Amino acid sequence: INDGEDLLMTVTMPSIEVGTIGGGTVLPPQGAVLEMLGLKGAHPTTPGENARRLARIIAAAVMAGELSLLSALAAGHLVRAHLVHNRSQANTPNSSRPVTPG
Image (cartoon, rainbow, N blue to C red; front, side):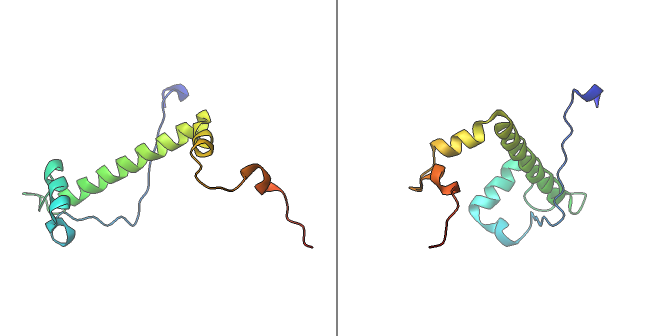
């Protein structure tokens, strides 16, 4: 697209199950978020439309996270951040040495 100057991203989530009626939507936090998004309850004219919109929002959030992850990886920030914020006590430089039996 655009002579290779644009980025085209897609996400496939074949098993995503969402709902805007019943279940956990009656809980105050979940209901409040659906209200903020304008998706709580049934769509007034098109059954299932609110659930479709919620699924699209979730897929968009997943793509944003993936894009952020890939850009951090490409820039070398991901590995650096993991090394800086590593909370384990393991000595990572020596962990790649093979263990010899004996």
